[in-house]
Image (cartoon, rainbow, N blue to C red; front, side):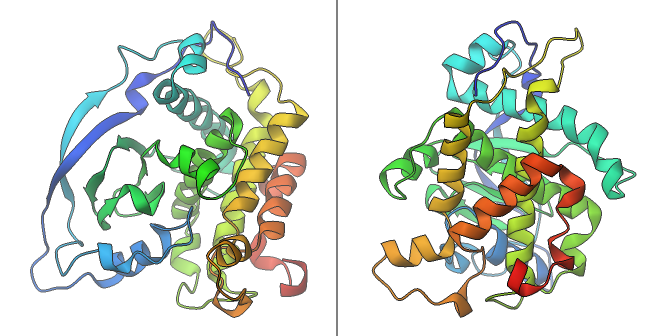
Length: 300
């Protein structure tokens, strides 16, 4: 999926972050923030990262060593086509424009733009400490996306995905989908303690895939302030790349690739088939078709 060269991007949406100190909250342990992070911080990889949350200091807000935003280096679609960091800016600009108009249809009356941080190696967040091994994630207390772009190479080398620009932007769209769930209250309503078929954890994940698909379905119509569309029409090969990425991080694929037994009762993110199905549901029917919580388990 390519950007139109003349499209105007908002580089202030994405910032670089170094490792900072996390300010702990007295009296406490990681509490619900830590539980959310255990579930969410590994959403793209399916890896249990509870050991990364670190003692009782992960429940406070991070004091980041920010490297500034990308407003001076990522201003056009042409730059997004050449640079992966600028591609993240382009995705964020398009996604923010899309959800600014689409979120009210989901009952969101106070849409807020999430923060978006690019990091390398490790970073501290309101959900605790994370490393590149955790993959991209969304942290609810910070209302922020965190992405180490080295993960996109892992999609190819470790998870066997074909890769490509739309596959990378699918990942961002998925994380942005978790932000929409934060705003709709889906996180608060869901039982995040269960696993397996029909669990709320899987329903949250495939709903985020559906939201990513909904954005892709509309992406070539979303315009900047001058009326220039951000993205050119998506091709079937690009969609195939995105579907391949969705499948690569399915629980069954990850368990099989690790040499272990494929055990649906332990799933937290959904199978490859489920993730592809809901991405395509969003792409063809839009965000209002993404109510995964009303679907019977045998149709999930």
